[in-house]
Length: 171
Image (cartoon, rainbow, N blue to C red):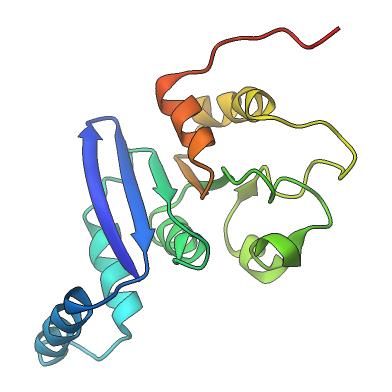
């Protein structure tokens, strides 16, 4: 797991996850070996995640984006367990009920460890769009718990951070 924090806005922390490759992998492993002499050994993923989490203010909303199998859900769960918050789905397909395996939706055991919202709530034959998602996520942004918005759908993040034109439903 490789995660990069970008603080473009003081109000939001945006994390992108990717799989490490090449030289960065070797440097990260070397740095983790150095750290291992000062504290108990943990996996590379855990060290990286804990370092990132410890540098995020618990008051800031967090957006976590990245490709499939890059560790987004694991990072969101670790953040929610360590600092609190509600994990909010921003994946276009994980919103559908019955698609857990197909979409790599978090397992029920993981969903039970921290509050999860907008997962598996839409019937497969129901219309759903990024506009529907924006309306569903709005109250979560105003709620008492810090939102940890996680997904791989760039359109959702773009709509959330840049806005989306209101278009009426087709006749």
